[in-house]
Amino acid sequence: MKQISKTLCVRAISWLLPVIAVAAGARGSDALEDTVSANMVLVEGGMFEMGDVFGEGRENERPVHQVTLSDFFISKYEVTVAQFRQFVEETGYRTSAEGLNDVDARGKIMKRFSSENLTVQERQKLHEEFLKHCGAGFWDAEKRQWTGYNPLTTWRNPGIEQTADNPVLAVSDDDAMQYCNWLSERAGLPVAYDLETGGILGEDGNPTDNVTSVKGYRLPTESEWEYAAREGGRRVRFGNGKDIAKSSEMNFRADDGEYEYLELGQYPKGTSPVGSYPPNSLGLYDMSGNAWEWVSDKFATYTNEARTNPYGTGARGHALRGGRWGGDASEARVFSRSSWVRNDRCNNSGFRIARSAN
Image 1 (tube, one colour):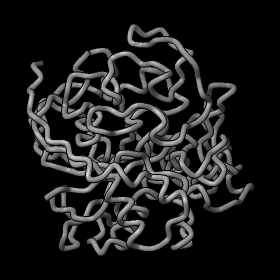
Image 2: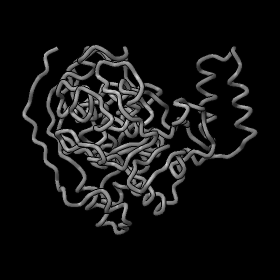
Image 3: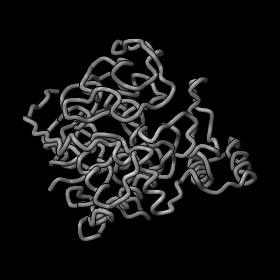
Image 4: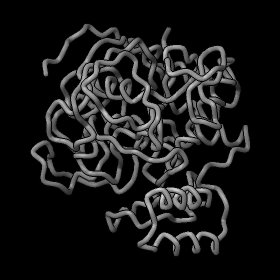
């Protein structure tokens, strides 16, 4: 499909107040709001061809379809450990991974999972039961594989070394929505999420499918995320504006895989402080690699229909984007999509924030 070009107006509100201001311990409302605003980039909307324009990914990345977006703000960086810690300290919030610690109940659920006679619906119900308990999915950096849900894995202890400036991990979509609503309240803005349903709320506080009517801090929509990662819809494979994945340019499992778009390199076996690698042309960091990023939408199946400011609803799962520190080059492509239920989490999952511009 032909890429439709459009002149982008990309304005970094300020480059003078780095994310480490929060990491250094800013506590006042004004200091927090100044830091958040300083790290948001205004992206002028436009029309682009969304989906795997290279034709090399999974079926859920197709068909390529036309999307038109309004202007929006998106944060330069993934939310850091320090920023999330401030939220937890001010609110006393406990994340999805800090749930019940009932070993016997967890064991019984796992035993029931082993039955071969369960329907899909029964397995989904058991999964939801299981997720009420503590812990998170654990990617073992040394074994290079998922080793199940570790009851000790939380944002405080993701199983890898983390500094205050690294992206927060082991957070669910629920946790990200709670953070966004807290940030909105601090800034005197209408909250963006109905925490019971997970749906978005308009300026009047009523449920809506129109993302432009949401005035508070929120997660980017899936189409906004891809548009920003592709530098305004360019035909590009990775979120740093490049078509070849290199370990010197993003954090991913670069020592493994046979892809024509991979230059073999090192595997860091953990996250890097946000902003450690070069940004894309919009000034956005880690759009490929480091942490998976939750978006606002549920995981909708693509169609050929042209859409304007799409917001996925109706599916069970919510979408994650952007690859991860434990993933390979294929996962790091800007078209790659994953679907998890709202309160699922792992030591590779994080998020960044956005706002509607109008």
